[in-house]
Image 1 (cartoon, rainbow, N blue to C red):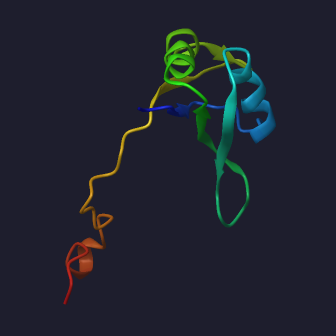
Image 2: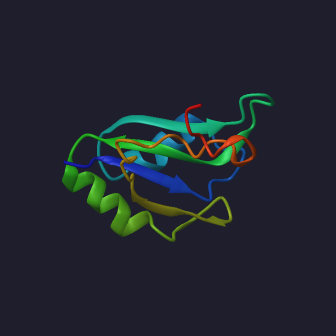
Length: 100
């Protein structure tokens, strides 16, 4: 059961609480996290929202995908799971993430 949503195109000024408030209009938000740059601390313009039920998550995708928030069009879709054996892509110069 997928309840976690990926949200792209966020205004860089939006906080976790701002995003939570936007999604709370469509159900109970378990968590909202705007992803930030680890060095500058500034928003990277995307994040994740976990809704309490599958139905609420589906409603958010239906209503908020391609909606305009703070003058920017956002994209809302279900978070995709990472492949189980992903090695993260690695560094191409040094063998593309392969073990030595």
